[in-house]
Structure formats: C-alpha cells, structure tokens
Length: 363
Image (cartoon, rainbow, N blue to C red):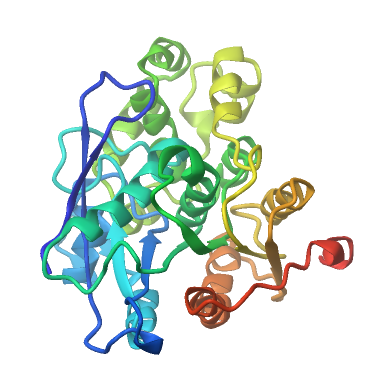
C-alpha cells in the first residue's frame, strides 16, 4: 500500500506544516470476528535524527550499513507480530524524519502524539486499504515510542476526538525528561543528549541563544554531527560521551538545565502524566532499566491511576547487567508478546483489568 504523508504544525514552530512520511503495511488475513479490520499505529523507539533513520526506511531495509551510517529496523518484529494476528499496521516516522527539510523534534510530546494520531487519520484516507473509520484502533510504542503513545492517549480527546482508542501500550516511556537526560549522560546512548537538545531548539528557537551561550566548540560540533546520525552511528561515535566535555564551564547539561529557568520550563511542558489518558492503557517498565529510569516510568502509571485511568501496570523483573542499554532493551523483547496479546484483546472488545489498586505492591 502507498505510504501516507502526514502534515501537522508543531508547537513553537514557524507555522509551516511538518511532513511526516510513514509506512502502511497490511496483513493478508481478514480481521478477527468478521468485523472491520483492527488497526494499530506503531510509534518507533529511538532511531536517530538523520532522515535515513526513519522507521519507514527500516521496513524496506531492516539493517543498513554503508560505511557512513548504521540503522536497524528493530520495530519490524512487533509489526510482523501484529500482522500475523490479522491487524493492520501504520507506522509513523514522526515530524522531521524521512524526506523532510527540518530536524526531528526528538521526544517533543506534542509533536509525537500528533504524529501518532495523524497516522491513524491518514491510513483511513488511503484508498484500497482494509481499514475503515469503524476499525478498532490501538497504539503501540516502546521507549521514545512509549512516550509518544502515552502522550497520544493523553491528547486524543482534545486533538483527535474522531479517533477512539481501544487500547494503548506504552513501554518504558520517558515521561520525565529531566530524569532521563541525567540518566543517559555518559551512557552508551549519550548521543541521544544531542538529539534531545537539537529537538528542543527546533521546537523552540528562543532557546538557541541560551544553548549557544553554554556550549563550547565540541558541543556545537557534536550537535551538528549527531543531527545526521542513526542509533548505530551514535553508539560507535558518541557512546559513553559526557556532556561536561560539551559545555564552556564543564557543567553537565543536567546542571545547565537545573540552573536555567527557560530550559526547566520547557522540560516541564514535556512532562507526561498531567492528564488522564483515553481508553485502557498498559504500561510496562523494566525494574532494572537505568537508561530510561524505571522510577519515572512507574510514576507515570501512579499519576494516571490517581486520575482514575484504566491502567494495567507491568513491572518487568529481569536481573541487571552491566550495560544500561541492555537493561533498557531486554524488557522490549521479553514483554512484547504479552503486550501484543493485551493490545489485540482490547481490539477484539475484551475489557481490561486495571491493577491500580495493587500498585503499592508492585516493584
């Protein structure tokens, strides 16, 4: 099926629509129960900031290595799992990834939420697909994708009242960027600091003079370099980098943010958990995850439960290993089957069983 091209205007933007290419795979089997084929919008995890890193590229080339870039289509596994269950799938590339003329606004909750919900709208408008306006809709995302689906569930009622959500899976969501920024500094995925900062500056250009006042030549060069990289490139080139090497006074980006009201305010605006999500949500996080810290992800479930949301919380208990990246990535694989089963149950009309009352007993 042709890939839909979405368009929306992010906050703090110049007002120009931001194109968001995406993929639209369809299964050969009919939907379950003889009704409209269900649809899941998959929000990719962190892929990078270069256009070549887009998830739609990973559908065509699951592993790319051409001497200049390394990209991995690791979302392909869940896509095929959903297709095997008769579910149609649409994948968003987010604003600024793919064939675009602007930077990806990495972890901007509003941009990501809009991209996910717009993907649902777009696939409904594509002729010749098996998806209709009556198709049950689910959302799936892990890591950056978990934040995107969590934000989409929160913003659905105000931004896309025409999209009713049967269920949302949010795995390891970066709900509190202040804590996540601190955690990734000096880790294997330290390059994501550059993507985060570049995304902040793309979202709100008024922050650029503040950033330039703190960044040294190495920091500015890193942001430029990382803006063309995928995850694989960043692991090789910026793994374990420390932001203290990027600032003029040797302070970490976390310290700079803490001391700068405008930056603190921007990150506060990105906080997920301030609104009640629409429909049932399954939130899973690895208790050993210290890259997208377990505590802040679990707190999102607590915040939602306090607002009366229908939350199924899953603590993925795995022994910690020496790699922060593996502690973060392992729950994606070990919990994925259960996550897909939970989501397809919601799409078939089965009611979820919230476990908010047992949250105090969960890790």
